[in-house]
Amino acid sequence: MKEMTKKERVIATLNLQETDRVPIYDLLYNDAVIEYFTGKIPPPGEEGLKITCEAISRMLDMTRSVTGPSEPGIFIRDDGFVIRRDRWTSWIEERPFKDEDGAKRWLVESIERLRNADVKEIADRYLEYFTKILNYIGDTIALLAQTGTGLDELRHDLGIELFSYLSVDEPELISEYLDAYTDLQVSFIDKIADKNLSPCVLTYGDIAIKGRLLHSPEWLRREFLPRLKRLNDAWHRHDIKCLFHSDGYIMDIIPDLIETGIDGLNPIEVVAGMDLREVKRLYGDSLFIAGGIDVSQLLSNGTAEEVRKICKEAIDIGYPGYFIGSTTELDNGAKLENVLAMVETAWKYQLY
Image 1 (cartoon, rainbow, N blue to C red):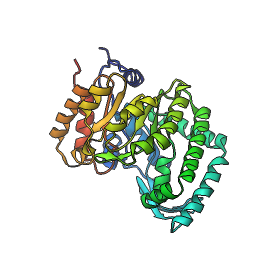
Image 2 (cartoon, rainbow, N blue to C red):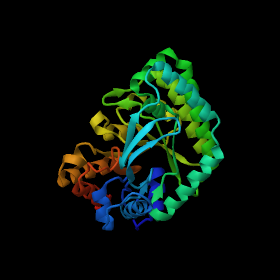
Image 3 (cartoon, helix red, strand yellow):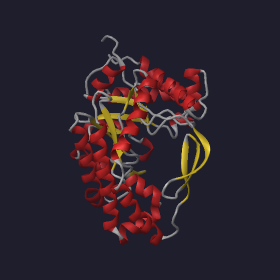
């Protein structure tokens, strides 16, 4: 088969068709890898973003959530959350509430903010940034956006303990927040969706952990899956495919996810119990697959030879309709030689 462009390779894989080689899909937040491909360690700011994008353009066929490193420090969100940033990551340092009553008040205010958000301004600002990213990453395909139901954001902001309490004590308020968030996302989709910008997006919800679902199937079928279907339907109206992302062990809920209209599955977290071979056997005729190369142990602590072996096995199992890539992202924990082993295997491994 003749050499394909990245766009041809990605579109063929999205449609479960044969390609010249397996495409690579990942997120790049690794200083050593960026330095290897560009000769530079990215600083915070616009120059760091350009350097990161240069590395992405040289190694990946498809990516998402493109950003450069942040200046370490603290900033305060409009709703009072104190956030600490440290280069490639950030976390909540302090919440604007201390107990369930305070969290409930914040939740009511958050619903109001979502309902009153200026969708056009949000979409215009996002498209300006995304267009800049496309110019920086060259012929690499960037997923147009990542859209969720608000479940991840709410659970993260409240913390798992207060989220659990409010799910029992104020279930209607939780549902109202998820509705408001999903409504905003659907309006956002209708303003930015353009197949000419990208053929695929990410829809997401981290609904599982190691070995099991994080929420009961009944709760997910009531509170998560119908809203996920709204997002997938909105993207499909614009003929854009949806790659669904959830960490953890999600085998028990994949049939339900397929009913919501997902087109692909990511990241196939093997340390959580996910099995690429089983996913491909059961769902490979209807879903493309992205991921499956463990970053927490294999890419971080394994040898390059072990990585090459696992990558060849993954390609043999997943192709066609398979994007090779890590099970979350290429962060600074992944060893340079192991990331290169994955990338070079994808580039050189013969499919025929």
